[in-house]
Image 1 (cartoon, helix red, strand yellow):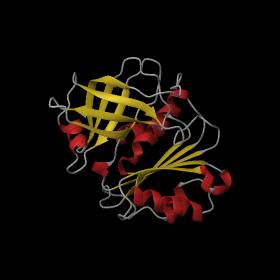
Image 2: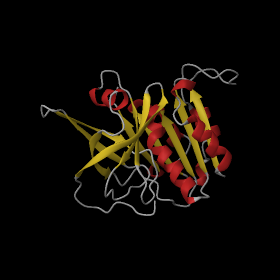
Image 3: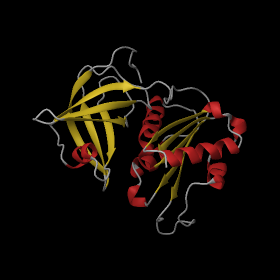
Image 4: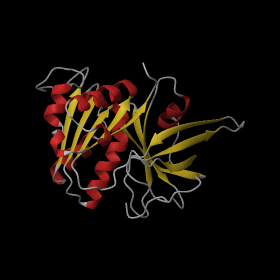
Length: 249
């Protein structure tokens, strides 16, 4: 966060995998060493390009999971997609010491700029990734902006960053996290599996009168439904920023 990217022409940069770790059985974080990285804001993303020896190349966009500090590495958390040629390579094949190409950072709207209003983060599945960058940035800055995260996930095994979020709730004052499980809940969980609905966002989000900055990220249908609920609850549509992946059903 000490230094952010300046606007200008984006160029491809060689990135070397310094570390790789599994977050869930199907999601892997790649820690990348990117020489002369210009910095990034929490919420931005990068383009990733893979090129085969025969010249065939494939390109995808991935949110940045890490906050930025001078000298820090860039982290991407990649969720394996069924039949996804790029995501499968990044999760199952790529190893430390190997390289890929990055272009970015990209985006200037779906970003948190350490503004004073309270923040509501609503994530569906791996839509948590850019929101986690915001949570990490707040922690690095020792920010006092109240943060609330509502994360909808299929099962406890699919929940990204579980141990880190628990630690941050304990150690970062003003951060609250609530999970919604749609297919299977942890043992002893008080609620049955269910999709994110009005009651959950009304209870675990901020009241509209608080005028929070809202960031919603996830599959298209999830984002559209969540944004509609928030507007129906009285939130200002201009304060709701969305980012989605996947097609429109």
